[in-house]
Length: 348
Image (cartoon, rainbow, N blue to C red; front, side):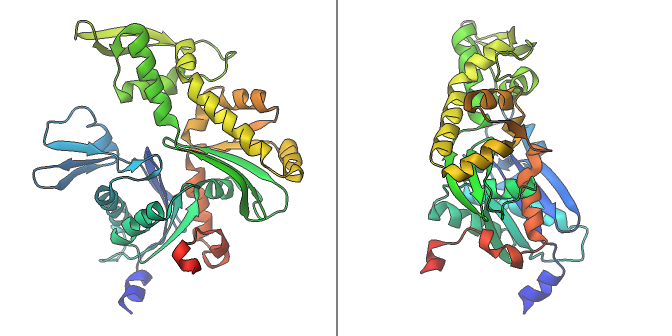
């Protein structure tokens, strides 16, 4: 009874919980929160100091007793307690403008395609403990396809590649289900690490994660015919231990990221090879769609298209495709029951 009363004054939410950022969609309002998935904690009293953008600014700059934590690793919850606190912070933030004293919203949230029963339960429990009264899990590429307004219920095939910070999800969708897929624990964060390792090996300079990410966003390139760009980065000279600034260009970054981009492209080919011929014909005609923050890497769509000989398009506003998909599902949960991930225990 109390659940229904509190639920009446709560706002249902769609959440894209990612390795790099968490985006929250509020029913009938749209996207209201878009913050980094980072939490700063005082280890002396176990209190949260900052969440989101404020916490991200602290990375690499904190004293010993303040820990900056990213509670998701490779798209799944790696630190249950911190994830719960982060989600509770966002749920409470949404409900500050409502009359709800104890918010108990229904939540639609994304999970990777290859999520295990344990990982699925971790996400579900974290959301429930953060204040939700009901949790619905939806596969990430399915949510992205819905957010991109692809006709997922049709018999024609739709191929979407959701490229986040921690994972790359490759899926062929038809008749409301995933027909062929690959889930890689490889994304934008790994590409940033590739840049750090390359600069360390080639220039004997150690860069910070934030510096490498900014370089990737500013001058990063996946295709050899992209215009050459250059930027100055600052790090620590490994020989002298002192600060040092060097110039790096697009060619350096492309070389640094080439191996992992090659792995992603090889897996896209494997998914196409395992797709029924009729659906491959549909994909060839309609093209492949990219979503997620990493899909915005300059020249990436052109590089993938060149390798698989199929047109590749980046969806509109790729960073928010998943959360927009959860929002569309949220508007009519009853009609979307078949799209949700079902626990193995629920099938018994």
